[in-house]
Image (cartoon, rainbow, N blue to C red; front, side, top):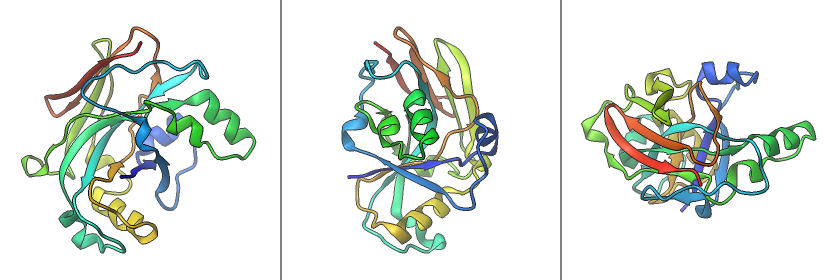
Length: 202
């Protein structure tokens, strides 16, 4: 399985990091070793001192597809979830300054805590509220309607370049409000009012 992530998909997040608005979705990958499931803790690594949370709606692909037309993209997933794209911002900044790839800043062990998945039929996936609390305080909150590229557009775009397979997970981008975590923090994520994950940083 692949973990496929979309960068810069919310305008306010682009602005808060001082980035340029892209002409097309920005794609990067995480290895399966990045996954954390079942509310297991995230262990802060010794190679970074500035790891940030970025909460995102997830899509789980249910069938093989490539070059998928936008109007058929909804047929390739039944479930949505919630996850955090943990980012070693210090490693990312150093790599960007040198014009180098920043895979290590996004793909390190445990950098993709995810929830269980729930059926999309309970929602209008183009209008879903989601949020993140840090130690009980709301730090991120948005709606999928604010995406630059919708879920179906993301699936169609990615599938032009790489074949999607059953079990692949798509991170669809984060809204504004990203920030650092530290040992002892508690992270809680919600889709609408449903608690999707609740885990500790150790």
